[in-house]
Image (tube, rainbow, N blue to C red):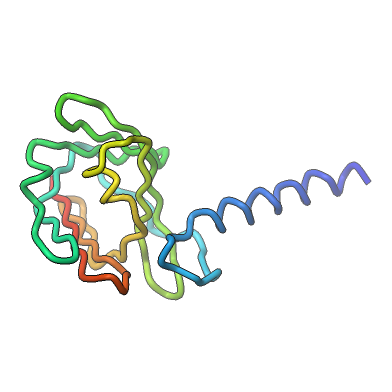
Length: 142
């Protein structure tokens, strides 16, 4: 009986974690970890951000984003350090990057979402919103 408890607990934990990583706009339960989950180390910046009705790139001027190998993300914004997490998943056949942040900064919270990965290299990441509420585009460069 004791040998069954650990595998059952692990299954419950895995189910809980994968279920909670879904975005508010996604009703699917078909989420799996992606096989190519690395992001080149170093400091990134936002080169383009369009949020539903207007371009907002300048709101992130001077901000840096560091994607760490342990799936944490560190943002330096207006001299403050903001932490969060990032992960890459496959959701209904789409590769997505999920960003979450521990902050009350509204501009950083705008970026918290499950973004569709349009392309990803060691020097550029192009993401788009998978939302019915409007077009969203987010580009990071090194």
